Length: 366
Image (tube, rainbow, N blue to C red; front, side):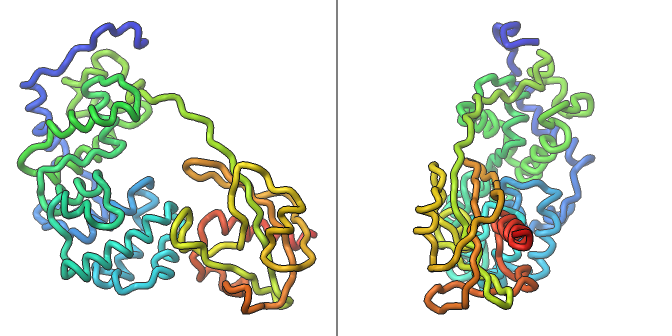
């Protein structure tokens, strides 16, 4: 069915809307996922574990997060232990999860909770919003799941469910305020934490982006999109703009023993605080040979390695050209010199791992 075939979609009656939370909770009691951070029935949720999992799950999937979560808990079993850690250790443990500002905020938040709140998280949305790295959704999720507050935790899965159940055809992101309004009206006064997790499970396992499983869905009967046969068309999305492309030059410097010169990126900004192969700024215009050499951090016999490193970030694509040289360790350069066998101990983002692999293969071939 096309949009033009639906002049005015039907609506859900107030009576049916009032029944939605109970239907979802009954389904959740039978089909809830067993997740490592989720309290079992009858257990009291641990706010630290709820918070840690919610930060890790931002922009990432359950399958990816599970081993990181287990490793973090083994190393930092509570918020005070995490607060006492170093940024290097946290960034190293975070490698592979991406969006490294989350790791910096994780440590900053742990510090505030340990120092200012005696290791106990605030139990309200407003209090949680004051902490580093906790936005509206995360505050609502923690408040509901860890403290039983009546809060509407609406993530991407929840937005999809709401868009379909009410057949809201306004494209995202413009639809977000209305979706939040609709979601807030359904949160029950009791078992709000279970409801929040039930909505997450429904979106993750039943009301999936493609080929939703409508037959076993607890909201099948009242779902307006299903009645209209447009469930796979929702939520509608505005046309994506083409990603811009940026360019940079990385400088691969090794000494005669094979140690590699690396340095730490500034704390603020993309990949902040991570270890990098020193590079230029990333800009919209490709770097010419002369200006690349002018931007080099030291005088040396630079040679360009074949090809280039390509990496995609959320908001832009990046191409890095690599210039290679041999030099003695020099204190004036700053940074660190790392033997290849010790690279695994450094907090290297995926981009820099790509650059190192490319440089090592290119240097060997040149």
